[in-house]
Length: 389
Ligand SMILES: Cc1ncc(COP(=O)(O)O)c(C=O)c1O
Image (cartoon, rainbow, N blue to C red; front, side, top):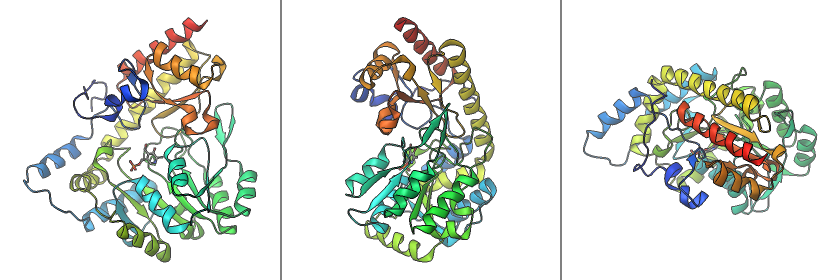
């Protein structure tokens, strides 16, 4: 696969490009923000979609055994996780699945915990549904992030109903260890807290630790957990809106499905259905190549920063194609950093503080782009930092 080739996305209604004016007030920035890739999808998926497109009718579509089997086999082969077919519920996206779970398992005023800084829509989902957001900030040490279990237990014992984890973690790129997952499960089991595990980045592992689905580690874990997964990040098909939950606990699954059906969210679109089957049955070789490409881009940025912009560092990336850049040494306020990145470096990144106050002084860089674009972006950043001196 030629991931080095630059593909013009203009004219495809790509948010990454076409929302530049709205977000950055200019189109003169290299867009390296929203989490999709400027890289071509697997040929196998494209061929299967094209085959389907040749049929002239796109009516209501269901997810049959082929769809479910593709998921069951993917989890087994990719993550060594044995799941039952009945545990799988299709849905159009991970965010809708989280929204349904919040409504299914908590009431207004209930407390829901997140590990901040974290994927910004989590805040919205919790607060807009009138639940109380409980922060359990990650502890940062020399570019690595750790869970604060003392703080977690303190809050859980005070009555948290649900914890939403992002593993691999967006934006800090952390992959949770088995020990960390066990500790989360032990605490959630002790205080009867449901675990919503958002594992949308599970197949994008760039470091040495494997991704471990939290529900796979024990019966206790599986009994407490709603796992959200999707091929959309790893196979670059976010526009096709396809995702699913895995819930082994019968009573949790029943409640969740009741809500999904009552909100009429059980429809997955026709092309998303085809794409998931294709990705999970034919996409593994492409994915291996993609991950190698992402890893080389991560290494390029790490090396470039170290050699040319030592004032800016990045946290240890173990998963996701999102890099968490630390600009704190530049001593800029959040609004100064924003102007600096847009006006001086001409980069369209995600502002760190949009992931929570702990992200102040940081920005998120999406490296799922051809190397030449990344090289240009890093050169622009170098010149902008040099001008500050
Ligand atoms: C952690 C995380 N969860 C969920 C989503 C969005 O999922 P979906 O498009 O399936 O709603 C993203 C997208 O970037 C993400 O990073």
